[in-house]
Length: 411
Image (cartoon, rainbow, N blue to C red):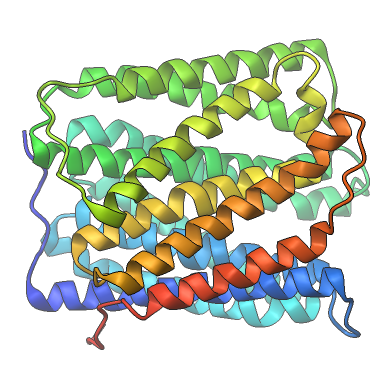
């Protein structure tokens, strides 16, 4: 079976390319806000609250960039061409909600305005999820992972929705409050992000001769789903340390590794496209980041290492690994293969600097925990190094922006 052909009319391509450019702007803005956050951490500024800036950074990066780009990919590959246009208004509504969050979070943190825009985006994402579940034309091999992604997207919403009631009940300073936040982050990054990307990969692989049938993908997907659910125990361990939670986390890590091994096992019937140059590099980075994510989740669940799961720098490093080391390179690769990024020295330079900046950020974030584990002093200017890497990331994204093939088209 081959994937359902997407609408490839020039006008449709122009509109999708333009909206990909809009999502890309959110990534560039989110990275710039992240650099501002590093700056105010290093040199506090009057009137700038780091926590408020952090909320703006994370919401724009997650919802403006990753969600926005995922929406476009779903609209293009998982929705019938004749129905695809009906999703446009919903996409633009969600972008307006992201702009509202970007404007309000730095000023008030979680206040009435920012919560209103966040709630509007949450409601729109639920409408998107319900429509995609009902109307998807994904091939059977991809449909399991796509619907798992949708379930995790909706499930993750329980985290932020619980924050208000928890605060009203006076539980803001208890373990339940940070656990609700980690619930959202876990099922967004390890659930929605990962399973959507797998669904997209499987859908596109069908064009290259993969014909193993849905059962093989469903088996690996079942292991990955079980592992994702069980590995949430890793997020709970710092709040509620216990041997049985550690055992659940370890089982979750093992299930994910087994699922990935089955998913990535060589398939004689599948012919991978001949990727060259920077596209080949991005493909290897995506695969390496995926495997590294799974290995880390298994390793941190091991006895003697589980205390690392609660260290803030390591949690931030893990989130950056998925968002910047896995999801963004995958979307870059997708855009290159769609022809939305112009190949050449500028793109190569931008992607190379981007990958270097992400790698440096990851290393610098894990150094404090590594040296603490070894009971040795670090002696490095961590905030200054993180600021330097953040600025390099902004420069890299700006270089890549110059290669975008987006032209104004009616939405």
